[in-house]
Length: 192
Image (cartoon, helix red, strand yellow):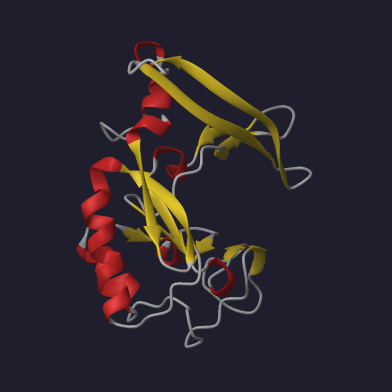
């Protein structure tokens, strides 16, 4: 039986040279031994599986999100379903170092917001992640997910119900990231 003071999580690092996840590992440690990075910036939302709740929806695989925000996410999903906006895929909690500077091996060095269960992706195949994209246009480089076509069923825009409900609950949209990336599937407390 697991100790209630334990923290469990699985993680990986993003290899920015070969464009793939590497160095998969499972971590088990006492919560009292978590680093500041593992604890994260939002109290109660660490990298630990124990801080996450599983959310199940009909016809979709379950996903996890930080327990602290469960009611907000459930409120958003109920509103999306009531408006009949298609929910085709949802990804929440997944621990991995996919942000920050790269080390001498080309590996990213910081956990993403997904690592803490404080970010969520909707309909990845309709709302891609783009690089070299200060302003969205055909010259932006699709790096993950599907082609973003505003107006296509399941695509997110500033007028879509997902955007409006997530914003109301305090989440920012990755489609409004300042800089060279646009992440149209993504919502988090920081937008990144």
